Amino acid sequence: MRVLVPLAPGAEELEAVTLIDLFRRAGFTVVVAGLEPGPVTCSRGTVIVPDQPLDELAGQSFDLIVLPGGLPGADHLRDDPRVQALLRGQADAGRLVAAICAAPKALASAGILGGRRATAYPGALDESGLQPTGAAVEIDGDIVTGRGPGVAMDFALTLIERLGGKALRERVEAPLLR
Amino acid sequence: MRVLVPLAPGAEELEAVTLIDLFRRAGFTVVVAGLEPGPVTCSRGTVIVPDQPLDELAGQSFDLIVLPGGLPGADHLRDDPRVQALLRGQADAGRLVAAICAAPKALASAGILGGRRATAYPGALDESGLQPTGAAVEIDGDIVTGRGPGVAMDFALTLIERLGGKALRERVEAPLLR
Image (tube, rainbow over all chains, first blue to last red; front, side, top):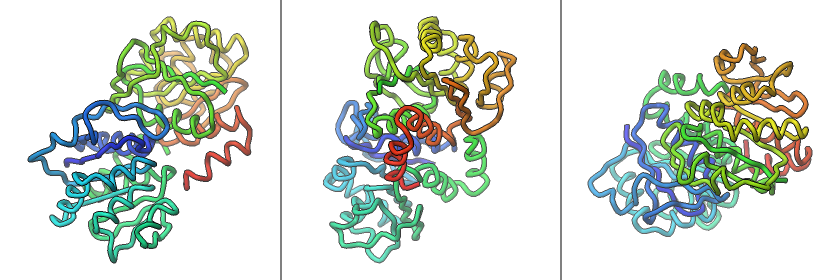
């Protein structure tokens, strides 16, 4: 499985790193792509060096594109035409798209949340006029959303189960010693 | 409050970043110190740029030194004489020391776990001959230990409560939306 994690300045590092870490524990190939070349300063000051810049993804396809939340990270994802095009292409192809915390706003702006059940950090979908359900994690077809940093692990495990099945989820979850 | 997070190559990034993130949400000053200058590649490939190298900490004191786990990160913390000296100095001064997952082995090698209740990842204390309790989080005087990545958030919140009180813990925990 191949997973793309676009990493914007001001991304929530706890969410980003929990996703990246658990997906790699699951054996997935994870590409952390910075919106611009170079290190990314996250919302609480953690500086992460992405695997590659977003502009170098040409020709790659992914089983999942997943957006970490955090502000202003989620606003950058919403406002970046390259990210928006990637999200629309992924959804049009019927492949999995996911976002947590503030980042569902970037799915809304890409026009792929209409008529879907989605959760998000309170207030994050206000600008779109959509109503989050408030659930910890929501699955609606090929759109998966999560509520906030406190459920980042559940969100990552839900995506692992979706991509690799229940047995794989259990193999990743057990050694976390939750 | 000032917190030191020594970051070794092969540190568990989910644990490291959860601690750093939540402490900064609590308003603590967090210094992420690399064992050597430059970026640190963590146990699942995340590359983090520390705030400063460990050799540049001279004259700084900390209310808490906390060790993320992961392998081989915890082995590096165990084998680094500078980290060992920092841990012994912190314990001798009666200030808070904490470690999660595999990292309690570095407390054991510094000689500060003798006669204490401590938890750790299964197997991590075998070489020291100490017996982990298996609890999610253990507090014994000024030594706080955590079991594994699945309890990183509880471990961080326990330390926040210890340093800043129950009301501060609640102010940090509520917006996580657990």
